[in-house]
Image (cartoon, rainbow, N blue to C red; front, side, top):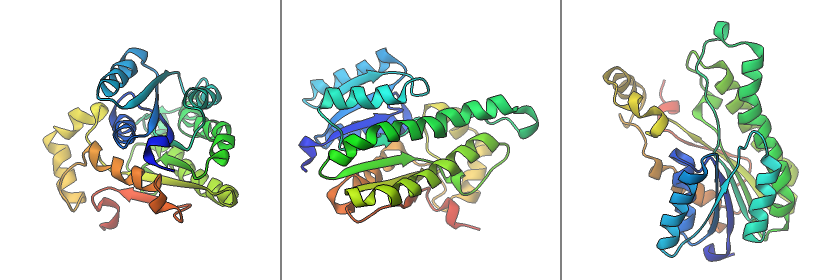
Amino acid sequence: MTDSKRRVLVTGATRGLGLEIAKAFAREGAQVAFNGRDSSVLEAHCVSLRQQGLSAEALAADLAESPEAIAHKAAERLGGLDVVVHAAGLRDRRKTEDLDGPDFAALLDVNLTAAYRLARAALPFLQASAAGRLIFVTSIAARIARKPDPAYTASKGGLEALSRSLAVEFGADNLTVNAIAPGWFVTEPNKALSEDPQVQGFVDARIPLKRWGRPEELAPAVLFLASPAASFVNGITLTIDGGMSAQM
């Protein structure tokens, strides 16, 4: 299937890594549905891309409330789905003694349960595709931890395990399921952290490249996993972290 015919849904496409991923697919010629909660921001992004002759549909909806509706609306607008990239998620950095059970469950509901519900709803469309691709954006926090971050770490670990499980279950349908695990990337939510000298000291000590990642450095990896070149890549987590998780 050529890039110009691929139908792609990206969640969490209002800003940050999700936005960069969605824009990268549009620039490759795909038909892209941008999902996020802020309709005005989404529409502004899509208008800008359409003015460049690219295909971009704004699909404003809260993933936590209606993941099934998001999958079905995207398929309806695009005429099906070939690629689903789940990049939406929340973070709550409170330590365990301050994070009660309901708040822990609420974060898991968005980061893990909603991801499962979205995938489940999208699977029939991806199975009908000539080469379906489901890609979860997890985190290096799925495998290594930094305190205090119990809920986020647990949710991303579960998401990585979910991707492997679905890869095994649906591989026979010519559908691949993989994950991308970003490290420290400069996005809107952590811009202040990226400018903190103390944090930069941590980055210098822990990341062999001694810098933060740029969002545009993550998108090509997602494009690869969605491409024909990755037709035999299934059930993996591709870590993009500048070597952070490789260093003792």
